[in-house]
Image (cartoon, rainbow, N blue to C red; front, top):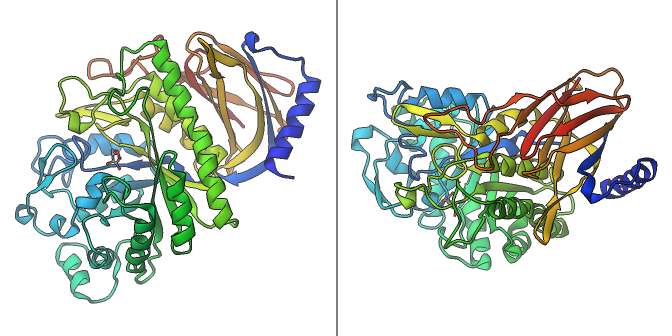
Length: 517
Ligand code: AHR
């Protein structure tokens, strides 16, 4: 029985057994079948992205070994310690748009001899190349994560891409492998993921889909597997709803790729007037969440195209850039894309991760943009100081889903009505980990009203319940250098065990994670 038919039948049964609910009651009913494990949630859905952009790398991650800011070989200790709490499975680098201007030879060897380049996409600032291949791989090791490189197609060559892979991964004696040894790394590194270009329809070369598809085939041919290394090759994908791009790539190059990327940014306004990160009204709250929810449909349509060419689901869909994008923070360089991060961002993160789970058969990786100081960041830094954002807390609360099995569910949610429009108030995902522990993540998108949830969880006997909640009094509640813990998770006590499952009251504008063991 397909998942859709199962959910439909389950839903019909529930709706006949349970009293009918109207949209006004603000009551939700959830049915989770703990015995129906549908698909594994690839932990790489919880991936991150760090670009040479504004304060993400320089200042945010890299301060240099001579800095007074505590560091390990130049990498900030406070930032690494905070990020380690998230169990980051994979980190994408060095861009973004920067990737298609980056030449890896600039970023190896003695730092004082590396060339100064202009970071043309991000404010024309001087790129010192002090953070290069070895520094990135050091960061990967300090975080205990895996590397996802974005190679240069737009202004690079197949030879250059080949040479970078050889430098990184070749175990034998070659000029490039020996250069790596001279530069301090005797063993080849494991490089699991390789992106062949970035946004090649835009900053990555302004190419047509057809032109890029052929270039992809050419470049990917020279991304070689050396020794035991086995590279998962990711083709540069579409932005949002560019279905023609996905169609063309799958048709012309589908057999040559392991993954195809997709970028999806959520803007309350449009590209010329995105809207403020703080001090917004309920219209902006509603619009942001509605547009974030649209990723569900966008994913479904890209996946339908992929299914046509790849019915066996061999090729993964990698959402390797996603998140909110607002007007830049006042007083900052607009090219640095620095923005505050509020409870609204936490809701966007929570609902988007739940939706990725819903598409986990095809969505095998996602990388939120970006790790530190840029866009929907986990961490903001200022000199030696730092604080973590509401989005950080969602990633920390949701890490329990990494590699767990998605459970079948049916949700009957009230609507959150705003003016003439509405969206569903509640958004959910349920998983079971390898120890049999169930986690249910719930977002209440309604900023004004609590939702009472009655949940039936089939297939569990004795149960112990616990929960955590992230909420605050205002829609734009946020942390800053003065108040670092204004938005932070708390124990969730609006939770009661019932005969069939549990009942809970989800506060307005909240993210809740419930554990059942
Ligand atoms: O994340 C910021 C930028 O957004 C990236 O460099 C680019 O790929 C996208 O347009």
